[in-house]
Length: 74
Image (cartoon, rainbow, N blue to C red; front, top):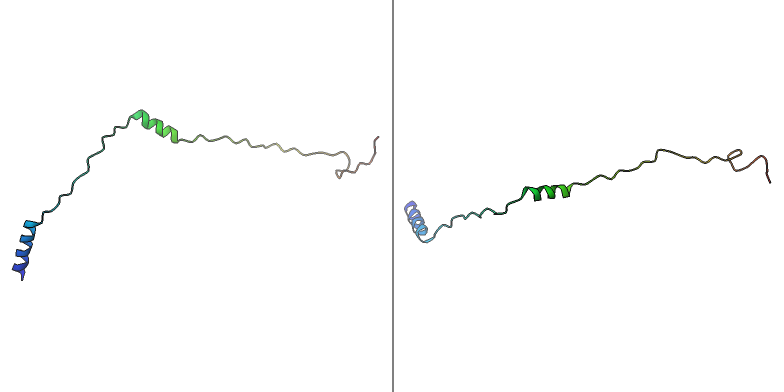
């Protein structure tokens, strides 16, 4: 049985050609250092400065603060 298997495989190898794996050619694109730096600079984000108001103003009323005045002026 083993002899028939070897004979069959040898005949098969004669008629069937094995395809070689072909390599893709390398890309020929040359990247300029200036264009690369420009691209990197375009990706950078400049932070926007936020102005935080720390000063708190309160309204002051004349009188007791409830809007009721002790003296009426006219």
